[in-house]
Image 1: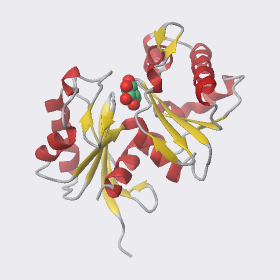
Image 2 (image 1 turned 60 degrees about the vertical axis):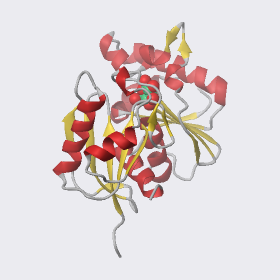
Image 3 (image 1 turned 120 degrees about the vertical axis):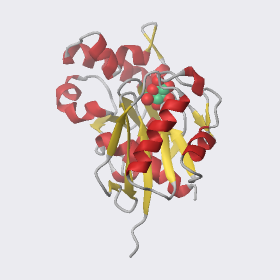
Image 4 (image 1 turned 180 degrees about the horizontal axis):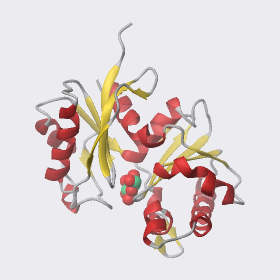
Length: 251
Ligand code: BGC
């Protein structure tokens, strides 16, 4: 049997990470390689970072790439909350493709990528109904599924929470910036989840992002949410796996 492998890259607030992915198992085939996300994260500097990651493996096949903003049509960037605004309205597929020497490239929102990976291989596997995957990190990303089908670019991190952009209150960056205790932060996450639950009445919340590794520190503190709340299972690899899945679908 020939292993189905595609390269996935996840562009995050702190790192640009990538690896070839085994799409039958949803696992990285080799240890991932990471470069620091440049600041400012301009198109040129991020594209260079992606080139370095893909080049590290000498990869010459299709590449799926996540982006932390709205991405339409597998290509066009529409928002850039936590990266340089120079990205807005760029044709990211063309930018990456050119710099990668013409490799076929697909681009999608980072939380959507993490979500599709969790739904296929992780905490959302075989779950019907409404499922919302939230990634808590530099921002808050969201992926909304109904009977396993993604509604892309939902951007629920930018809902208003107590008069603020929700991700400014309840992301892990907000926890660090404001030196919040786990209790204080869990309280904010709880308010946020209650708001999202009021709007969508999901059966399940999957909580992703690097902090999902420490879910035992905060999930038990969250009360009063009717939906089941579980940590993501693919943790920091979900974006890479989901990006590769999308690139495979696009072939
Ligand atoms: C962006 C989203 C992204 C999330 C997580 C938000 O600020 O608007 O598109 O998914 O951060 O990176």
